[in-house]
Image (spheres, rainbow, N blue to C red):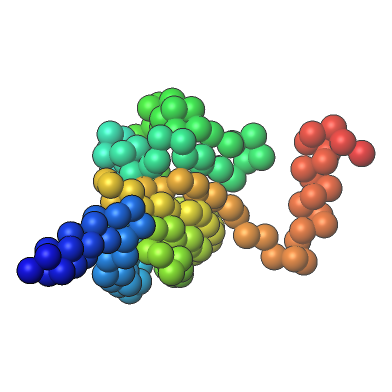
Length: 165
């Protein structure tokens, strides 16, 4: 009887000890995480098109950064909110998107091709992180891809505009 009690106490102490192992967490379903991240990006563009700023900015992490097409456009969420406040929205339509999710299921990065009436074909790239509130955009970078055959002439125009020789 004494041995049985001692064994029970030892087993209980071992189970409750710091560092005691438990069943490993199940592996994240990366396809499902990718689909959820995709829906966040789709909502991001839809809300921007509607100029629906409150839910749009709720899709960002508090410390997110948005890079616009102009070199001067590196905005915190608050700075970007100030820019958007004077706008009724902008429409970018996804034509292609690739999303990659880290093995732990908590970070995703993406690239997408978008069409815009004014800028034509553009590219968005960025990073999403998953937290208690789901997937949020931590960084978004909008670019206008330029054909290499036009690059040198375009760079010369930029330098002239900036007064750089």
